[in-house]
Structures are given as C-alpha cells and as structure tokens.
Length: 391
Image 1 (tube, rainbow, N blue to C red):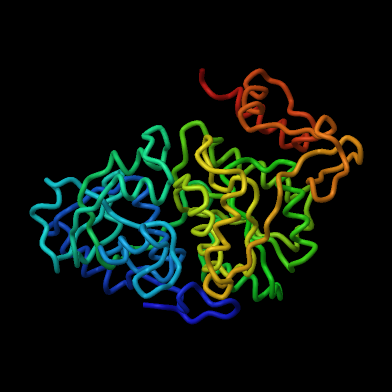
Image 2: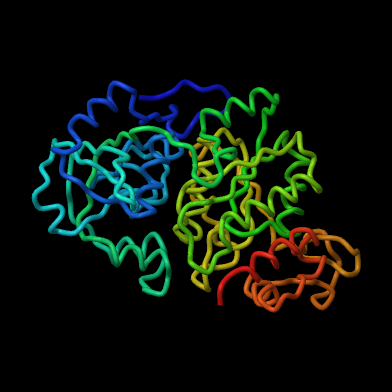
C-alpha cells in the first residue's frame, strides 16, 4: 500500500504504508498461536517500524537476495534506484530451516510482544565479509556495525511485512512524527524548502551554527535526532532530547523548527549512512539535508569528509534531495564567533575544538564545557545527567 503526498516526492515516487488495517490485524491475531515465531532484536524492530511508516520507502519488507546483493555491491536496487544500506532480517540456520517460503511468520519484539508479520518470499545465505567491507569499508570486528553483521545469523529472510499497529513511542510520544504527518506539518507551515538534520549526539555550538546557516537559505529546519539503537557509550536519547528542547526554547525561532524523533537504529556506516540518512529525510518531506564532518562515523574508519564525497557518485536527480555540505565548525577567538575555515581568517591556535570524548570526560568530572562549545543551559543538563549515572 502506498500514500499519495504533496511536496517533494518520496524516494521511488510513493510513500509506503505497511501498517495493518483493523481487519488485517484481526486476521493475524486469530492465527498468532499457529504461526512460526521469530523474536526481533532492537534494530530489526526499528527497521520493521521504519518500513511500515514509509521511512524506508520504497522498501515494503526485508530485502530479497537480488536487491540485497545489488545494494551491497553498487548502492542501488536492481532497478537502478539508489539505496546504500541493506535492510535485512538475519536468523540462524536452526531458525530458518523449518520456515517455508510463501508462509506467514510472526514477528515479536525483544519483549516477546507480537508486533508484525512477514510474508516469507525467500530465504538465502549471504557473505558477511563482503557486506562488511562494502558497506562499512572494514571487516574489523571492533567496528560496531561490522560486529552486528558478524554476530547475526547466516540466513536472511525476505518478504513484505505488516506492522500490527502504530503505537505511541514509550518515551517520546509527543515527538513521534511519521512521514505522513511531517509532510502535512510542512504544508501547513507553508514550508516549500525544509532542511533535515541527523544527529545521535547532544546539540552543541557547531551544530547550532550549521543549522542556522542552513535556515538562512531554506524555510524550515526538521531537527530529527535518532532514538533507535546506538552504542552503549553514546549519550542516552532522553538526555539528548532535553538538550534539543532547551535549544529550541531559548536559541531558535520556534516557528521555523520542528523537533521529531527518528526511530531508526544507527549503523555507523559513515559515507553510506549519509546517503541512507538523506533518503530517509526525503521520505519525511525534506528537500535538503545537512552533511557535516564525519557524518555517521565512528573511530578512524572514514576520512573526515568521505560522507560528503560519496554524494558525487550519484546524479542530483537520482537522489532527489539536496545535500548541504559544511566543514568542521569551531569557535574563532579572533572573530569571537563560530566559523569554519571558509569564513575565518584565524590560525590553528585561535580555534577552539572539543571532541565528544573530551567533553564526556569533562562532564564525568563535573566540569562545564566552555561556552564556546556548548550553551550553558545545555552543558548544565549534560552534567546533571552524567553525574546521575551509576559508576
């Protein structure tokens, strides 16, 4: 099922809707005790939701082998449409063996709750090392995305899915804005151009600077922090959301910003994930997407601006969303403002950079990050959260 939309076209032309109707849901519930059952992990559960609400349009289920291999190899579906991250459901051989193609599979979330159904059209083996090297540019098991690939089962299950029902997010119900609604909100506000911003980190002065630079060009900002599965040492989603609320309340024109959660999981795939994140925001109705330094990166696996260079591998009309590229922003002590090398005449020693690692160390010691890095209200919230964590 697809939904007709106004504004920028979703990727592939139609917004996917795989949320079961009440009649379909009743039918699935009647058969739930007779269906083979698979328990999803956190990432697969969020993928199920993103497929169902249209965030991963044009995908309507977990990828079949031909599309999977084409995406891993060439960043395109078999039909040539760009797509950079494989969306798969991997299981063990023991789980896969009794499953019959053409059958319905019950999908449970990590708590064991019946949340979805897979119409199994195909099950196939895949090459984990090939996926790791192509998607993540490394086969190092220390890479969090690679580790997921190597830890999961060797068989992929493919086919269309149904989400039984769209529940309110347990932690951020007021910020749950699905693609149909975000597009409607943009229309109501009269925004013809909207820039999306992806983040898994608390907002800091460099983020604020590039967001406001973008707002000088477009009508609205869609601040879209990711609240799905992240690394254990990333700042928790509830802390990040409070920081965004503080910033919007005190430092942004509120009528030009929409804050909403992105329920998908991080892959830490660097350049490929930058394309992936852009296409997701296109489905939410954004016309532009901010790509900064080391987008979706981790460790030293990617070059500083590789996530920007990868956009050159596609024609603009193929992606259908305009990337807005920004260099690493810093506080310039000479001009006493945020800047990049494009706008600042300063020497290296006149630039204040702070890494996320250094800031986390300061927070654990109860030290406020300097105002050149973080607004004081945000820094206070980060300290409060850091000190409330058990050792």
